[in-house]
Image 1 (cartoon, rainbow, N blue to C red):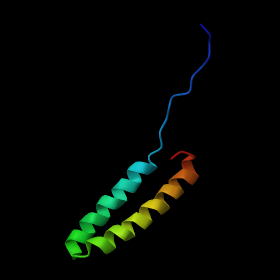
Image 2: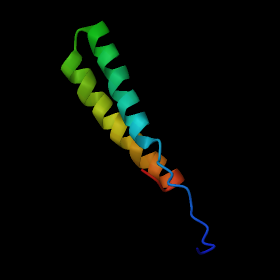
Image 3: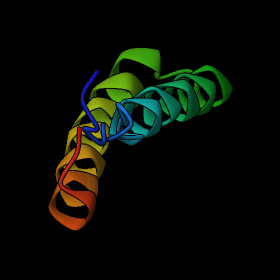
Image 4: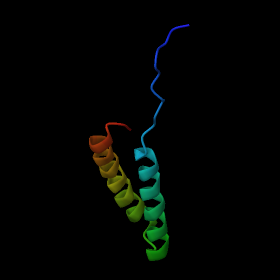
Length: 60
């Protein structure tokens, strides 16, 4: 046996933020009657949030 210290396998939360943006976009789209437009807007916002979170944390 070796005495190596293993780092825990951490995962970033940017994927959860992306999905959260999509769900918010879906809800807004259903409320306004513009589902496609709201989802496309949420998709763009989700990618921007993912990039910001990666820049801050260094993890996807």
